[in-house]
Length: 247
Ligand code: MN3
Image (cartoon, rainbow, N blue to C red; front, side):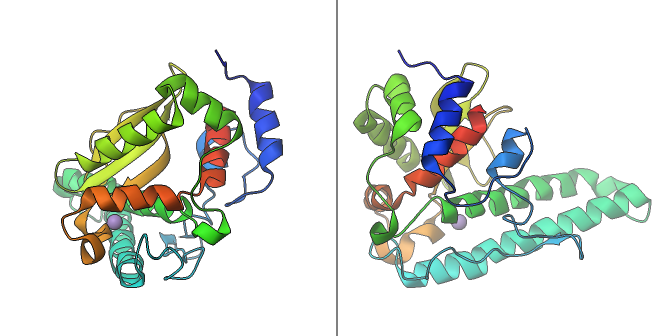
């Protein structure tokens, strides 16, 4: 059995090098996974902005077509950022005494949904890569070993990941997560942008199964979309997130 320890993590991180979004120099797993800049945080205006895609709109075709990417990123993701900024502003006003305290629960719900939408999509875009530039295949190193330990094989992981994602009720996400208390990888469904996830779960790889993510190209064939999603996963980036999570 392969056990995770700090030496493994460091070895794995060194082998990976600087892949994807840069690491922050702190001891916090979450902070090592993403920086405020990578999430589009604008400190001058105290709000989030839409991060640009790390590849062209048509770079993931045919797995995900250009029009879907344009609408999904420019319209849907931008909408979550507007909602997040609005919720932050309203919560600030309530804290200040200038807002209506009776609306606190409403804005907390808005924060949960739209912050989830923003973070999920940021992780989604960077969790994919064109097939001619690192996308697809299988993970390597410690992540590959741990997937084998916790799921039996990569094929069993892939099969469960697709099955769980396919059977999300309504709109939501399928996730590979790291659960630090038991030190294990798990698969989790998410409804909407936030529901069914639990405290401590560290998201590593998410696939958007809202219809806006696939309907133009796949219509009702969510399974076909998921099968093709497996061919554009940016495994070096997922490995980087895993290394940050277990550090
Ligand atoms: Mn979406």
